[in-house]
Structures are given as structure tokens and as C-alpha cells.
Image 1 (cartoon, rainbow, N blue to C red):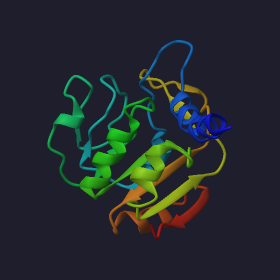
Image 2: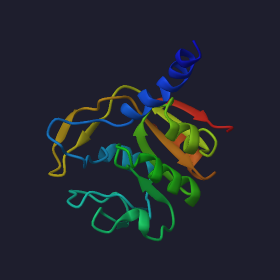
Image 3: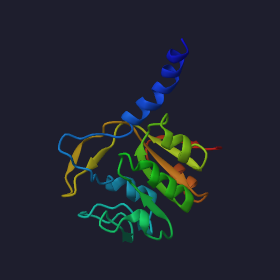
Image 4: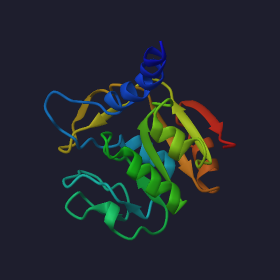
Length: 176
């Protein structure tokens, strides 16, 4: 009976890891933020996880996977549409520590990444209404995202930006 209890307690943790990212059939891991989302949020100084090929800028300066954005010095207001795989917590942790920026991720509110880096550290969230359609690196629109998305604001100046962005969804000021 004790072993059954231990398995039941551990099972959600294992499931959380198994479903912490999206697998796509064609193996692509670079998806561009819809340009209307970026336009609604204003200018960003840095995108530390930008696609190598991009038909429009996400920020004034970009780091790609060739630059290893996690290893670089971050500055200014940061835009972060990170890889949605197992590395996601590192990106959210880094943005939370930087304290000035907005991230776009799937609204997987039950994950360890949310409990470690969003709920206790973010200033505000905007749960986007409906499913986003991301873009391919050639600028063509892709299909609907595999899950709902959320914009996460770090830094007091970014919370009002989300609230007044005009992006359809539900704004939530986070009290930690």
C-alpha cells in the first residue's frame, strides 16, 4: 500500500515532464511570432532566441542558436519566444532574472516552469484568446498552435503594456 501511494504521488511529476513540450512532425523548432503581436507590444531591444532566418525583426538586436542567447549578456527590454522544449525553463528563468521583458509561451500553467518562473516572478499575464498561428521562417503563416498561448510580463513597465496592447484575451496582474 505504501508503494502505491509513492507511485501515485510521483506520477504527475513524470507526466509533467513527458508533456512539457510540443513535438512537431516535420522536426522544425523555429516558429516566428505573429507580427501583429509584436506590433501591439512595442519595440524591444533584444531577442535572445531569434530564428536564424527571419523575414521581419523581433527586436533591435538578435541572438540566434548560433550565438547561444542564454550565454550572452542581455540588455534592455527583451522579447522572448523561446524554444518550447525541455530548455523552456532556462529561458523563463533567465528572463525572470533579467526582470525586463515579455515572453510568449504555451499556457501550460500546471508545469514546473510556471511554478518556478512565472507564478512567483512575473508581473502580469495575458492569456491570448483562441489559438495563435505562428509563422514559418520564410514568412508564410503556419497552422494553428498546438495549445493556447500566454504573454508573460516581467518588470513593472511591461504589465501595463500587456494590459493596453489590444490583444484579445484575459489580462491578469500577478501577485505572486
